Length: 205
Image: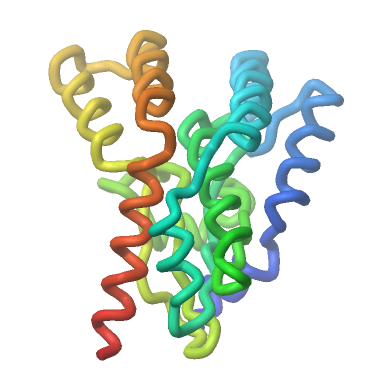
């Protein structure tokens, strides 16, 4: 395993630890990350509410659970994230439920982007440090098999089209993006991650 990825794993948190870290920082009026501002703290507060809701409402499809439980190997999903990130707030609860229902085939670990710059720089999106980013690691082989992120294809298209038409990322597109996630109900994340895991299994045959 590359030393940069190994270092990221060493610095990582479980989902429960990540949630507590974000909550504790909010209690002090802070957010995760190098930059601190009132707007980022407010985004983090919104994300706390979103994650609390999603943890109660997200349903993992039966076929997804079956595929996860029948994986031939054990994997780590190492996710680059920050508490202020709206996409991460929509996606992490889904990943956590998938991992929980995988019968220990998936171990979810979360690492903060700004504290792990070397790792983030290995998984840029169009040259940018977009998050969340899921790094799929095979435990048995100790190697990275795939990566995914920062958002599902449909959400990425929505964002790309808006930036093409208006040249900015403003509050309107941020609201539209959250509405997209609400309507999608976590299905796209499940389908795209399962497709990745299927491809890993297929490639081993």
